[in-house]
Length: 309
Ligand SMILES: C[S@@+](CC[C@H](N)C(=O)[O-])C[C@H]1O[C@@H](n2cnc3c(N)ncnc32)[C@H](O)[C@@H]1O
Image 1: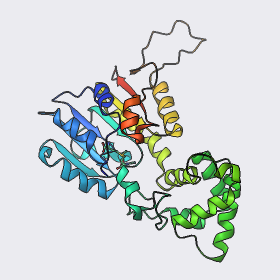
Image 2 (image 1 turned 120 degrees about the vertical axis):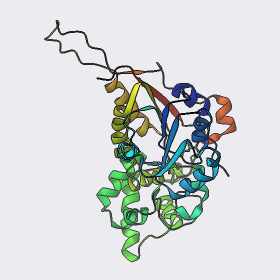
Image 3 (image 1 turned 180 degrees about the vertical axis):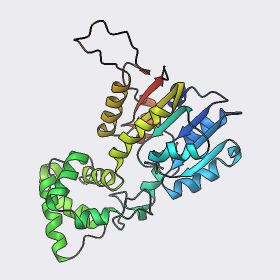
Image 4 (image 1 turned 90 degrees about the vertical axis):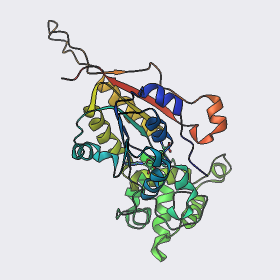
């Protein structure tokens, strides 16, 4: 199944693509957002990043008609400033981050992202990186596993699950998603197992965040991205869980407020360099959720640079 771009209309509305502008899509994925941006450019240019080689291959396919105005870059979006610098670009008019993984990651069973398919424990978005879900599950201490499941999965049964993983690997390493799902199920009380939703969902989310260092990467990237924006340039971020959304909300809040020390009431009036473009976080319409259930947990936030000092 192809990846249907989430909140495409809203993302474009907030990005306000100018035909001669310079844009970055940090998360090329299936190329849906990138294609829509590229279509709106004439003399402008789009730099599209993905850390996943499969997304890069698909991106070349989908964006073939636009390759005169699109550069596809196989790298972590965390490195966007240095990559753009190498192209002679120091400022951009818009940046989009549509976080998480693509539908094809879940559909490709062998990548180990899904608790629904049996596969080797992996979950690396960049398969050249050395640390995978296998290392996480088989080398982290019970305390470290508990911390990861609690912090990144908000899993209330983190401790018993971690304990059972450590016990299971005393005999032999835990190698597959199915083995892990069985350990998780055996660690949960019946009343939790009977609830709606897959019992391994929280642990799998936590592993994915840890394996790909997603939250630290996001924090660093948002700061670089804000620095890169030209005056009137916009940063649009779509997140899929509350841990990511909280980070975006906080960094946007910090960037769009100026602290006036109370003890200095006569300080010259300064205005913040950034302006958040909405009062309430933007969520998909009911119709979009019906048509594309993957969009259900999406949240979009957008910020604009008003001053460049
Ligand atoms: C939700 S998908 C993007 C879908 C895309 N907007 C579309 O319309 O098809 C997220 C993509 O971002 C990539 N990704 C996630 N974190 C990344 C990072 N730190 N650097 C570069 N790419 C990343 C994933 O590999 C995945 O392909």
